[in-house]
Amino acid sequence: MINKEKIKEMFNFTTNQKKTIKIAILLFLSSIPYLIFYQFVLSMVVDKYMPNKNLAMVSILSSILLFIIAIRYVCDYYTETRRKFCWFDNDRQIKNKIFEAVQYAKISELDKIQIGNLFEITTNMGSYAGMLFVWNLTGIFAIRLRSILIISIIMLFINYKIALIIISLFIISYFLLLPFYNASMKNYKKAINSILNLQGKINEYIESYATSKTLRLEEINTEEISKILKEIKEKSITSTKITALHTSLFSLITYISVILTLIIGGNEIIMGVGTASAIMLLIDYISDIDGHIQNLLNHAHGILGEYNAFLHILNLVSIQKEENLGNEKLLKVDSMEFKNVKMSYDNKNIILENINLKIDKPQTIAIVGKSGSGKTTLVNLIPRFYDLIEGDILINGISSKKYDLKELRNKISYVFQEPVILNMTIKDNLTYGLKNVDFNKVINICEKLGLDQKIKSLKYGYDTKVNAKTDLLSFGEKQLLCYARAILKNGDIVILDEVTSNLDLEFEKNIIEANKSLLKGKIAFIIAHRLNTIREADLIIFIEDKHIAEMGTHDELLKLNGKYSKLFTTK
Image 1: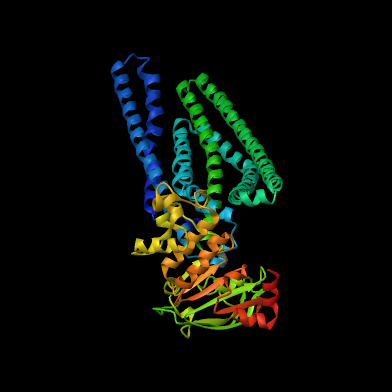
Image 2 (image 1 turned 90 degrees about the vertical axis):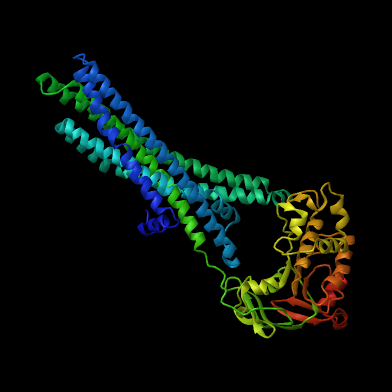
């Protein structure tokens, strides 16, 4: 069920291996004096010195007991705080590695992961997995098994005949109850996987609540969540029933052990070869063993949950990273060429093929076509978000793969269909990721976009804090913020993906006018459904059936009286 190699990989995942081992050793050693001497000293006081009214020895032994208890308290405090500090640091390191893996992962690989599950892995699972070694595994080996071992040895010294019978009984019960334990763990694992699925679904539904309401999916979503909850309930109840049966049977064996101890020990007392205090100690120790073994089951459940969480984390951090084999510097972009480009996301369904296009700076290229024709896919190939199946994209006559990825993307300004607004001030959103930006330039671009007056009308102006959900700015105004940020980056290549689709006519007019000056001297790709925004483009390409069906200026394409002309006249 648990892979040893995976456990080793998990143990070495953070830098706290030595700390974990030290904590385990301290936990193992800290309670040994208490386990060995507490009951022994107590029995000496009760059996020998109190009956003889030896107050001096009672006082000395009581002081020893207090000293042992004090040592245990100090050790427990130290080890518990160390365990928590180590757990918190594990959590920090695990989450750092998860976030780093996500940052450098191939987009095509991230596309395969459910967004809700991605959120769950990057948040809660790190804390859960961080407990595996420092909490539950040390709990099993350094506390529970240690205590059972030492108590068994002490019992052998007190009365080896009774101790051997009791220890044998517990060992036999372990093998008899093993099938119940395995069945419980199997159902518990299924319940955990269902819970992870539930968390991922809930995160996803919360993120898309507006879409759910628009499409009237509330009942469908509720039914699906109810179905998963019912599944979790059934699996949890089954696991609980098996665990309860396991616990009850083990408690029965404990009671049998106590009865045997009383019978055998009582007989020894009658015969004058045993003492009442020894029998009471054995019964006390039987209760201790029962408690520790019951806790072992709880630790095992915790380990299984943490192990499964860690498996999800290992899968994520081992996700394929973007290949950055290029080392060429890119000072500026003068030309681009799509050369026999062929693209598929799954190596089966072809999205684009035989794409050939030469572009010299400065030039504005508009890309049109029906939804799903591959327009966004085409521009996503420029920053190398996805790999080509065939062909190449040349920049300044050199394959884009030969350029350092950071160098390439530094030369690209991209505005996506959905505005990317971060939880920070408007000013910080505009200058995010940029260095040494002149604030006067920020204001100038916002004025050209007709955004400056709206920003200044807010209580704190450019220092107003916004986020993706804020209602201080409309959807279109948020898109304009992203457009302004892209222009401020001043990339040689500008990609505008449906920038005007959510803008009113006034803002759209501002964008069209701004493009004349802000895109001057650049290679710009504009994807648009509103064809009036691209009429003045230097080149318009019409994509259909995976190919470039038509290509030319607005006037040239109208004269062709082909697909573009038909699309334009029907808009």
